[in-house]
Length: 455
Image (cartoon, rainbow, N blue to C red; front, top):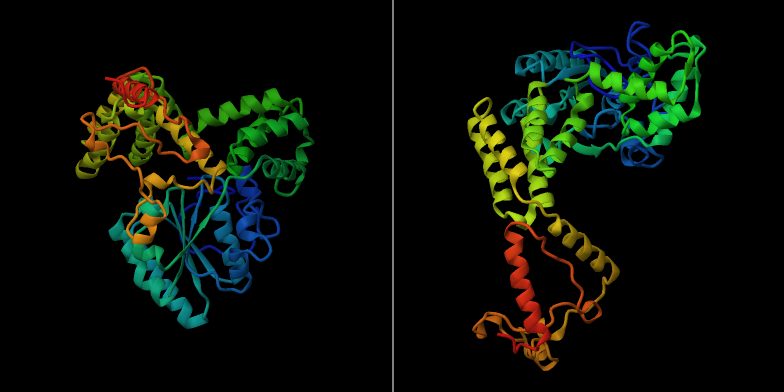
């Protein structure tokens, strides 16, 4: 695990908080050398670190407290933890939930307790990938966070609501980091190109503006990916000293190939998996599923993607698809790997071969847009509830027709506000179960248009 600008630190013992920028030495990757050392140098996250914002205020008042930093790779979680330790003059102890366990936590706590007693200096325990700790392991932090022996800063790419125990969440603030925008990535790249002490300034490179703009957009908000790609491009351009968009594009591909099993490709693999499911290709879906597993990825992210896909891309074309995804996720929790990979594969094949429809997604989008357009549209009187005498006198519920009073359990009446009368949000697709839904809705529509006289 290599140290880098906005991502995974090297797990280990206490490290000095001060002088972190470029502290890894000349042999370190560019991303490590260009790591910001101050809040002023830190790029992005203005919603957290802008003037008057909560996290900025806590840091400047020297009261950061325990926190969870949640965001995608390359957004500054590790760097921000370093800077907080620097600004608050605390000892910084990195810890990886992937490679270390509770025994190491106990060592850190003992050292932190002694440090606090002897010098009054606090310890920031930075737990990278805290979501990899199970709930029992996370419990090991609780009494020491509560007692103030350590300040815990956890970093995660997963939703803390699902991955961090409630007791820990109640004792830690959650700050959400967002992907960097292309202008911020471009500024970061230009800094690295110009910086002779830590960056590539001593190489006399000529980098085209369109090459920087290409990489700033292609990095998907990941500063680490951007700097690693720039460094690869500089190596490709050793002879010419010139980096154009083509060189940068080639470097981006090379970075993916060299880090095929690393976190850099994580979201690309998920995207390939989802698109293979949507495209009804079970072989492709199984392959990308296997790639993520064999690369050390958490299978639970595949289940989350599959659950979303079942609702978004299959919907009511096969109502069993979502049930299958939920059941497979529960089976995995019971079995665990490797046996749990079987329901994962079964679910993957089922979803890939199921009939497809995005009618539910389109209906939801259309209904939400209509709700935004007509936020004050009144509920029609005939479908309002009338629990009081006054409401009945005002016409609430008058002329409402109870569907079950009809032999067909259907009566033609309006349920939308007047301003939206006749609007259609859901149009069933032509495949699978939705064919039957379409027939039923067509019959209802015919009854409504005929005033209820249809047979």
